[in-house]
Image (cartoon, rainbow, N blue to C red):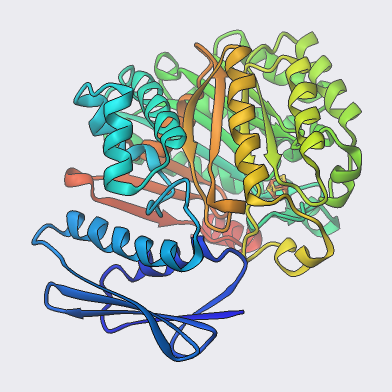
Length: 470
Ligand code: SF4
C-alpha cells in the first residue's frame, strides 16, 4: 500500500503528515499525488477543505473554518483530519491528534488551574481526542512532574555529559553511537581530554548565566566505557568548579552490565557519600533470546549480578529501563520481564515502547521478526501501570517518540522520592541544559518559551579535533 498527501500550504504540514502516519503505521507515506490512498488539505485564507481519495476518486470531503488563534486552528485542523481518517479506517488513536513528544506540556495548565482528573480528561478528550485512560495517565504524570519542578527555581540548570560509545550496537539504536573497537578504544583518553576542555568552557558560561547546576547526567552510549580513571578525572573537574551545595542528583547511566565492574562502583560509591547518585542498569528484557537478537552481549544473569554488586556498594537509587514490543517477544515474555525486574527492586523503572527509527538497523531488518500488535501493546501498557502502581511506583515523567509501535508512550515510574530530577527538567523545557560531548545538544530557554539549541558534532574524531584544536 502506498499513501500520498498534498497541501497547497506549509501550514500544519507536520501534523498533517504525522496524524496520517499514526493511522497507517509502517505504510509508505509520501508528499505528492497518486498512491492507493491520497489526502489533500486545501487552504483558502481561513477556509480549509480536506479530501480523501481512493484510486483517484473522492470518497470523503470535509470543510471547516480556522480562527485567528494559531493554536486553536491547529487543533481544529487536527480534529477534522482525524475525523476523516477515522471514518476511512474505522480506527481510533489512544493519543488522538497529539503529535508532540512532550504530551505533559498540554496538561500543566490543567494541573495549575486545579482541575479534577475527570474535568481534565473531559477537556483532553474534547480538544485532542485523547482516550480516557491516556488522559488520566497524562494528568497524573503532569501532577507529579510539577511537584518535582516546584522544588527547583528558574535559575536551576542541568549538565549532560555524553559518551556515545557502547560495547556493541543495539538493533534498535538510532543514536549515532559508536561500537567499541580498536579505533574507538584508542580515542578514549583523548575523548576524556576533550570533554574536560569543553567542561572548562561550559563552567564559564554557566557562571555568566548565573545558573546553578542541580542535576548532572552521564549518558551515552555507555559512559563507563571510559574507565574508572577517566571518570574520576571528570568528577574531579566537576567538583572543583561547580557549587556542590546546588547538586541534588548525579545520574550515571551504567546501562549495560558488561561495562559495570568493581573499579567503577568503588569510584562512584565515593561520590555517593556526598551526592544523591542514581545508577542506571538497563536490562530492556529478561529474555536471553531477545538479548541476543537485539545485539546485546550479555544475559539477564549478568544484569542480576550487576545489581547485586551495585547493592553491595550501597547503591539504592537504581533505575532499570525495559522495552515493550521487542522483536519476537510475546505478551508473556514482557510480563516476565516486569516481574523479573521487580524482583531486583529498583527505585525506578522506565517503560519504553519499541520505536523503529529510521537510522536504526532494525528499520532494514524488521521483516525478519514478529512484533506484537497495537492492541496487545496497549493492553500491556495498562497492565504494567496497574502492576507497578500496586508496587507503589508512580508515573513521574513521560515522552513519546516517532514510529513507536501503535504510537504509544514511554513512561518513567519511580518509588516516591526517587523521581529523576534530570528526566523531569529535560521534558519540561523550562531550564537550561548544558551538554558536553560528541552529539550532545545544549538547550537554552529564553523569555516567551523561546528555545535555542546548540549542537556538538556527532563524530567522535571531529568532536575531539574541534574541541582540542580550537
Ligand atoms: S545501549 Fe543505548 S546508546 Fe548504546 S547501542 Fe544500545 S541503544 Fe544505542
